Amino acid sequence: MKYVQQRSTDPSNEGWVLHVVGKGKKERVVTVPDSYIESVLGRYRESMDLAPLPRIDEDTPILPSTKTDKPLKQDSVNNIVEEAFDLVISTLMKSGKKQQALDIAGASSHWLRHTGATQALDELNETMLAEELGHASVKTTVEIYVAPAHRDRIRKGSQRKL
View 1 (cartoon, rainbow, N blue to C red):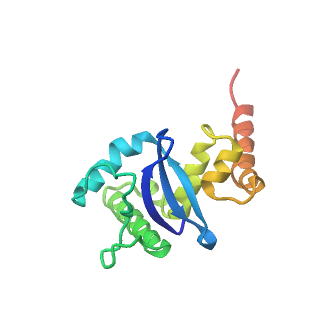
View 2: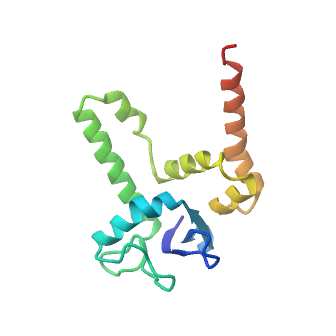
Protein backbone atom coordinates (compact mmCIF):
# COMPACT_ATOMS: atom_id res chain seq x y z
CA MET A 1 0.00 0.00 0.00
CA LYS A 2 1.44 3.32 -0.99
CA TYR A 3 -0.82 5.45 1.16
CA VAL A 4 -4.26 5.50 2.69
CA GLN A 5 -6.78 7.65 0.94
CA GLN A 6 -9.96 7.42 2.93
CA ARG A 7 -12.27 5.14 4.79
CA SER A 8 -15.94 4.85 3.93
CA THR A 9 -18.92 2.59 3.93
CA ASP A 10 -19.31 0.56 0.79
CA PRO A 11 -22.12 1.97 -1.38
CA SER A 12 -23.98 -1.32 -0.87
CA ASN A 13 -23.93 -0.62 2.90
CA GLU A 14 -22.69 -4.17 3.45
CA GLY A 15 -19.57 -3.07 5.30
CA TRP A 16 -16.60 -0.75 5.46
CA VAL A 17 -13.84 -0.44 2.92
CA LEU A 18 -10.48 1.26 2.81
CA HIS A 19 -9.51 3.11 -0.36
CA VAL A 20 -5.78 2.71 -0.98
CA VAL A 21 -3.30 3.51 -3.70
CA GLY A 22 -0.81 0.72 -4.35
CA LYS A 23 2.09 0.08 -6.66
CA GLY A 24 1.93 2.02 -9.88
CA LYS A 25 -0.51 4.45 -8.23
CA LYS A 26 -3.25 1.90 -8.79
CA GLU A 27 -6.33 2.52 -6.66
CA ARG A 28 -8.15 -0.36 -5.02
CA VAL A 29 -10.69 -1.04 -2.32
CA VAL A 30 -9.82 -3.25 0.65
CA THR A 31 -12.46 -4.64 3.02
CA VAL A 32 -12.14 -3.91 6.73
CA PRO A 33 -13.49 -6.02 9.63
CA ASP A 34 -16.33 -4.54 11.67
CA SER A 35 -14.27 -5.20 14.82
CA TYR A 36 -11.71 -2.64 13.59
CA ILE A 37 -14.45 -0.04 13.20
CA GLU A 38 -15.81 -0.76 16.67
CA SER A 39 -12.58 -1.08 18.63
CA VAL A 40 -10.01 1.10 16.87
CA LEU A 41 -11.27 3.63 14.36
CA GLY A 42 -13.73 5.46 16.60
CA ARG A 43 -11.23 6.03 19.41
CA TYR A 44 -8.53 7.09 16.95
CA ARG A 45 -10.78 9.58 15.15
CA GLU A 46 -12.00 11.05 18.43
CA SER A 47 -8.34 11.61 19.43
CA MET A 48 -8.09 13.72 16.25
CA ASP A 49 -11.26 15.69 17.22
CA LEU A 50 -13.31 13.97 14.50
CA ALA A 51 -16.62 12.18 14.73
CA PRO A 52 -16.15 8.46 15.58
CA LEU A 53 -17.28 7.37 12.11
CA PRO A 54 -16.57 9.07 8.81
CA ARG A 55 -19.38 10.21 6.57
CA ILE A 56 -19.70 8.58 3.15
CA ASP A 57 -18.66 11.87 1.48
CA GLU A 58 -15.75 12.53 3.84
CA ASP A 59 -12.24 12.42 2.42
CA THR A 60 -10.20 12.71 5.62
CA PRO A 61 -7.25 10.32 5.35
CA ILE A 62 -6.72 7.84 8.17
CA LEU A 63 -3.08 8.88 8.49
CA PRO A 64 -2.85 12.54 7.53
CA SER A 65 0.39 14.46 7.33
CA THR A 66 0.67 16.96 10.17
CA LYS A 67 2.00 19.50 7.66
CA THR A 68 -0.37 19.11 4.71
CA ASP A 69 -3.35 17.07 6.00
CA LYS A 70 -2.89 14.88 2.90
CA PRO A 71 -2.43 11.12 3.28
CA LEU A 72 1.00 9.98 4.41
CA LYS A 73 3.15 8.38 1.76
CA GLN A 74 4.40 4.80 2.06
CA ASP A 75 7.82 5.78 3.44
CA SER A 76 6.24 7.80 6.23
CA VAL A 77 3.88 4.97 7.17
CA ASN A 78 6.80 2.51 7.12
CA ASN A 79 8.79 4.81 9.43
CA ILE A 80 5.90 4.98 11.91
CA VAL A 81 5.56 1.18 11.91
CA GLU A 82 9.32 0.76 12.34
CA GLU A 83 9.37 3.18 15.28
CA ALA A 84 6.47 1.29 16.90
CA PHE A 85 8.30 -2.03 16.55
CA ASP A 86 11.48 -0.47 17.96
CA LEU A 87 9.51 0.76 20.98
CA VAL A 88 8.01 -2.69 21.54
CA ILE A 89 11.43 -4.35 21.23
CA SER A 90 12.95 -1.88 23.68
CA THR A 91 10.13 -2.43 26.17
CA LEU A 92 10.46 -6.21 25.90
CA MET A 93 14.23 -6.04 26.41
CA LYS A 94 13.80 -3.85 29.50
CA SER A 95 11.27 -6.36 30.84
CA GLY A 96 13.76 -9.20 30.43
CA LYS A 97 11.84 -10.76 27.52
CA LYS A 98 14.83 -11.01 25.20
CA GLN A 99 13.55 -13.93 23.13
CA GLN A 100 10.23 -12.22 22.42
CA ALA A 101 12.12 -9.08 21.40
CA LEU A 102 14.34 -11.11 19.08
CA ASP A 103 11.30 -12.84 17.58
CA ILE A 104 9.92 -9.54 16.30
CA ALA A 105 13.23 -7.81 15.57
CA GLY A 106 12.82 -8.32 11.81
CA ALA A 107 9.22 -7.15 11.72
CA SER A 108 8.17 -4.47 9.21
CA SER A 109 5.05 -3.10 7.56
CA HIS A 110 5.50 -5.72 4.82
CA TRP A 111 5.70 -8.39 7.52
CA LEU A 112 2.36 -7.10 8.87
CA ARG A 113 0.86 -7.30 5.36
CA HIS A 114 2.12 -10.85 4.94
CA THR A 115 0.84 -11.87 8.39
CA GLY A 116 -2.59 -10.36 7.72
CA ALA A 117 -2.83 -12.06 4.34
CA THR A 118 -1.84 -15.41 5.81
CA GLN A 119 -4.48 -15.06 8.54
CA ALA A 120 -7.08 -14.10 5.93
CA LEU A 121 -6.59 -17.42 4.12
CA ASP A 122 -9.12 -18.98 6.52
CA GLU A 123 -11.77 -16.43 5.56
CA LEU A 124 -11.19 -15.49 1.92
CA ASN A 125 -10.84 -17.56 -1.21
CA GLU A 126 -7.75 -17.13 -3.40
CA THR A 127 -9.41 -14.70 -5.80
CA MET A 128 -10.74 -12.48 -3.02
CA LEU A 129 -7.36 -12.46 -1.27
CA ALA A 130 -5.61 -11.54 -4.54
CA GLU A 131 -8.00 -8.57 -4.91
CA GLU A 132 -7.43 -7.48 -1.30
CA LEU A 133 -3.66 -7.57 -1.82
CA GLY A 134 -3.81 -5.85 -5.19
CA HIS A 135 -2.16 -8.72 -7.02
CA ALA A 136 -2.69 -8.60 -10.77
CA SER A 137 -2.73 -12.40 -10.86
CA VAL A 138 -4.21 -14.97 -8.50
CA LYS A 139 -1.13 -17.06 -9.32
CA THR A 140 1.03 -14.61 -7.33
CA THR A 141 -1.23 -14.98 -4.30
CA VAL A 142 -1.23 -18.77 -4.55
CA GLU A 143 2.57 -18.98 -4.84
CA ILE A 144 3.32 -16.54 -2.03
CA TYR A 145 0.55 -17.25 0.49
CA VAL A 146 -1.61 -20.26 -0.30
CA ALA A 147 1.04 -22.83 -1.26
CA PRO A 148 3.27 -22.22 1.80
CA ALA A 149 0.23 -22.29 4.12
CA HIS A 150 -0.90 -25.54 2.51
CA ARG A 151 2.56 -27.09 2.93
CA ASP A 152 2.68 -25.92 6.55
CA ARG A 153 -0.76 -27.42 7.24
CA ILE A 154 0.31 -30.76 5.73
CA ARG A 155 3.57 -30.77 7.71
CA LYS A 156 1.79 -30.02 10.97
CA GLY A 157 -0.99 -32.46 10.18
CA SER A 158 1.48 -35.27 9.55
CA GLN A 159 2.88 -34.78 13.05
CA ARG A 160 -0.47 -35.08 14.84
CA LYS A 161 -0.84 -37.86 17.34
CA LEU A 162 -3.45 -40.53 16.84
